[in-house]
Image (tube, rainbow, N blue to C red; front, top):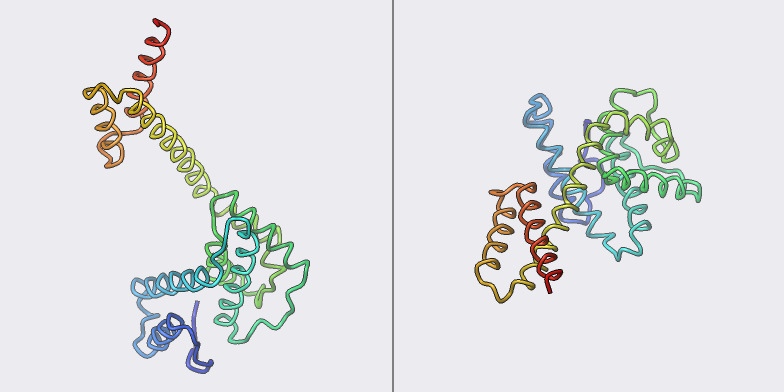
Length: 230
């Protein structure tokens, strides 16, 4: 994605936007776009700053997450649209657009993605490969056609993220059970130390989750047997 004539736009008030504007203004004079390995990191820097700006503007409580994500989508979309076509997005954001964005946010959340990841793919990959769809509208960007294309192209990543989420939940559950065991064996320093060592080893990566589960279940079995004997 090229960012031509950045200096023609009004100077942004946000210091991070000003910084990134300076970076983009140096891309063409120094031929950075012709060095993919370097330009890739310029793009990553831009995305990181973009996320920081949006998050600082729309941080809110969990109850307002959907509304915040909708505003976040609109903000990022307009910013990327400006850089893509060198014009502001002039269409009014309708109630239908808002509902479509809400649906998109839910689909992305359910599949482990954030709206900025989706919009990065849309503008940097999909529209680059399919220029006939330029300039995009919000309604088109939220259409089933585009969303399903994104999900299909990222199906392996979705699978991996779901597996990671399952492992994360299993890990948190085992850690919580380990802390319960520490309280149960508070008077037995040897067993207590063993549990602490296992949890510490899991945290620093020297013990895998299978070993942690084995140790926790063994100790829990001992607790049950002790209770039954009483």
